[in-house]
Length: 440
Image (cartoon, rainbow, N blue to C red; front, side, top):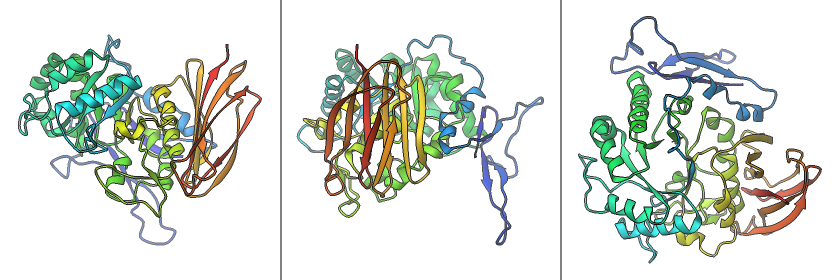
């Protein structure tokens, strides 16, 4: 069972606490995030539309991942024309350190064009410019480091659209003025960071930002945010939420590790899209890991990073490493083909903190992703989720030496059907990723 909430408009977010004082004296109490007045959580006129507090219940943990209850408890879309809203993969400068083509950090228009070129070559629809482009006090003005309108023009000629970063405080103060400016520049979406509040005023900010963004045909990705509650049904231009200890933590410490990564699909991801930001290709063992930035390392195998593009729900999905990290790397092809929105999801097995095996369908293709914690694991994956006919299975697996050399990936192709069972041998911190293409 999981406990969460839905449809928070006009309300405050709920927390659970255990006020018990001794052994055997354990129970939950719900608390609402207080506002500026610590004695008041929610104010409003009667009749008041309360939030849904939700119990998700299933026979197996994976059944909770497959549920669409949270979005279904939210009102239908208030955005009439959604033709401009598209999910997709994005190149991103921040995680790797804004590394330019010479291998050195440089937050410049030229470096951002380098990332746009990478997105074009890889078939990604987006490139995200992170922190550092705007005036400190006025997000309608640039600070001279990156010319956003020029970058938008450059990217448009290469069939790529630009997203830009800003803080919650700036967006909260200036959205009425700034969002139309961004639309005039031709920006496609906004990453709004450091929201860091989910009291009644904080929750209302999400709705206000979503509405104003939709009026200007801007998509949104919230970072430093509270967990989702299904607002993407009402405002489908909200594509992403962080609200998770993501891969950026590998720049600073070891909290982002294989055990954590196979826990969050069963916990945080139940609430909705999860912008974990996968794609790290400097894969190392636990013993060899050193937190650093730029050029971050990630613990676990490269095949596990590939599997995240199936296991983690993120309509606006990062490809986090520097373009050079993917150059001449055959495993990168799996990421290039990975969808970011799905027609069907099947959780084939898993336990929180242990492992996850998931299959997702987009159109007539299926994708499979499996990850394990630090325990080496052998699994058998029945393919009875496939439709009729034969498929080519493009398999990206941990190579036999991946436990020692985590960058090692075995890439094979095999003809399969719904009666096939695939054996998978996952290294410690390892993974297994498969693309199934129908044979015509």
